[in-house]
Image 1 (cartoon, rainbow, N blue to C red):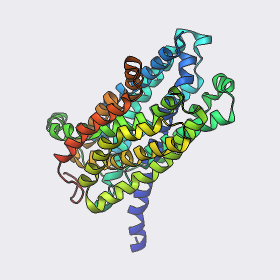
Image 2 (cartoon, helix red, strand yellow):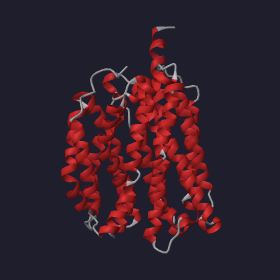
Image 3 (cartoon, rainbow, N blue to C red):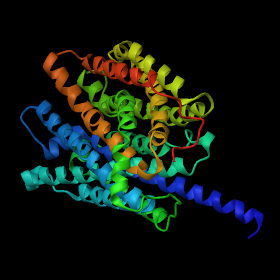
Length: 421
């Protein structure tokens, strides 16, 4: 083989690995985001109630239930990734997600199937939660393990954000292009059905994908190694609480929040959210890139301190009747959250040793996403309903930021050395 061909082979492998990881994340998060953005519509179609608030709480409860399946999915697909190889985990997780997505787009509504429709929606959401539980962490592990040391942070987080932004843009297109009657009748199905084509592309990219990771040869040493990672596990949990709560609060629940406090309509809310998701898409790799140069720790501390101090003032801007003020309020939260979110994927991989990296990363990540991220929209609705105070989400975000900031201050720098063996 010539020198040019020898150099090209690892480059092609890295490019295919990046594409396979990104497209899987795109599908997983696109479908999860679509459900969150269409929660009000899904509430009416699958969980009708006399009180619209109770209907919305039921729909968001099913959204949260999908997240509570994620720790189990992390253990399942993480175990597959560590014991049978990263490609096996990536292929099985995207297959499960594509199937659940297709079924959701074909489900009968409560009007035609009664309680069976509600149960089928719940079942599909649980399968989605299981699949996402393994998909995100395993694909991030594959991406970071194939990246050069000083570029690990820059490539780790594009797929999830692009998928969420596409979900937001799809919501905006639906509400601007169709009437509410058309969305309720058939329009809500289109995003789920469109996601199947992305799943098929992901299956193609992940077939015959070869990665050179080492794996333990027997089960007992594997679980001993896994249990030995408890300090890193707790560190990831602490670091992730604020970014996880903030992401689902600011980029999923906020669309419903702005309509609920009567400031703007659904079309304007989706437009503002989509623009900020576009900003987030730029902030995430920028944060990873800067952290490759100056370190993860100082950047994370600065972002979390900003969230702690500015959560309440920025939420106050969201209560303005000026659309520009609302946009800039979410923009401020986007910049701070985007910085911390941009560091999490690479931090997740750098904390754990090679032999149990998939399972440890997936389980720690999904415990936080399940307990704090997926429940954030539901808790926000409940806290506002209980107290009558529209600022409760801001106080919740500030409290979560305090916990994550304390963890970051006590953590060590991981940017400049090799991954743990």
